Image (tube, rainbow, N blue to C red; front, side):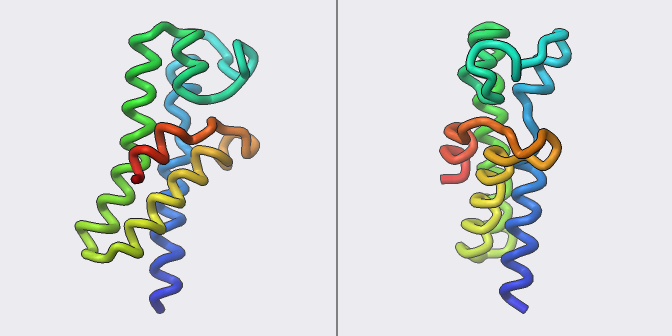
Length: 115
């Protein structure tokens, strides 16, 4: 049963990690971030394409999408393993988002939030 629970924690983290704030912010401005600069869906490329303020905001949001699942797993359920599974899931979701053909960012901000 515990393996199933860890898997669900990782899956929940993955679902949140798959949300690309960089892509959403760029689309709102009519820019396809995958065709600009490095083509990466991360805060650095977003900063180049959208400006420094947007880049910082995207970094913070990406860090939060790593932090929130890890914190929920750790504090709400009182289990370090749940926090690690959820944080790792968020990191993998950022790297390989199901919604964007498994092409995401490098995961620096998301991993820093999860840690």
